[in-house]
Image 1 (cartoon, one colour):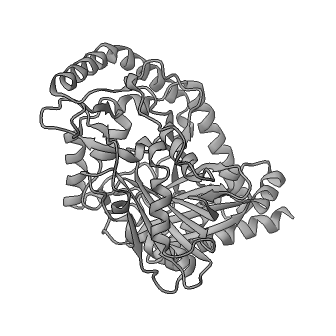
Image 2 (cartoon, rainbow, N blue to C red):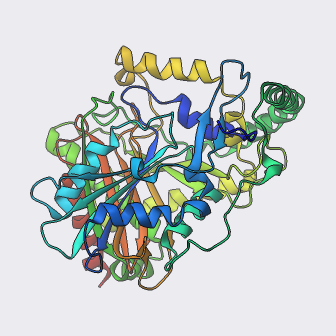
Length: 466
């Protein structure tokens, strides 16, 4: 640490959870695969990326933060922002896997997905893949969920996508109101204050939880139980990934014809694709598949949170109705259930998922996941879902750029968890819905089987809509 006393920032319970759940095979990184036009770059693309990131580093405190968890720390880990970092150490050029293009880049994405970030350094990395032609290249951005959740994600993404020379802009510092001196006495005081605050609010949280549980009983007809499938398995450590681009115009045609949303269409297409994969494997369950869907409760009550600014994202469990044969009827059934569970969650008005995460015991959580991994227990546990499906907020700008390079495609990608199935993440980008599928090799030998199923189901729905 520098001679000037650094300031520490305590991570939220939800962010700490991203650390606690990490094991040798379970990695808590978020990723993005970006197709860029590099024709304007003269010389080495990696050097350009290093320079462009360095040009913005003073505007991205999240990219300068290092995990700090000394032995005397009695509460959750902390982050300490470094004044400067070696950007070059965070950018790596990778050879493009055969056959190149989106397929080769997806192979690189699958390999990168299983890599842990160095906890002694800021938890992010950028990979550069040059394609065979001179006009296009792929960037793989890897950031630990600990660093970019909620407001910080918007801050970082906005900075990376802002065009022009940003080197002269005033530096952005971490607000002092959310930090404290990173010395033992201050760390101990902050830990004691937070533990006392959590203890004081526990009776109120228990009462709120009881009220919510009573409400859940009234809505129990909406509860769905995910069947045990070949998708609900322990991770092997080897991954497969694939990407797809769905035209927004086609999605909107289907949405308008059947009075559904793009999210509903995505869920229905994912369900049909997974159902087809399991059918070909001879492992199709008799019960419908269930998706875990991250959902931002913008009206959630955050007044009693222990840590401010942690976001309000919760998880909905949506029935994919894969036992319904007709594609249109299946889409309408998915939409009906998704709307109902969303309405119930909004009526509850609180996000218990985030609030109880403030009490998660780190060592116990980590031991739990390591035990599941060590003894291969995922196959013996009843999991809440068969797949994770997320449609992230898109970027509504014309001709988007990334590090001043025209960004033609932007595919977000998520982590994999023991027993939770593949991960399907989508984002609206440049008049398309860009999505990625990441899966363990035990889920499916090639994730392209899932993306092809999604594209085929959308084509079927589009034909029915016309």
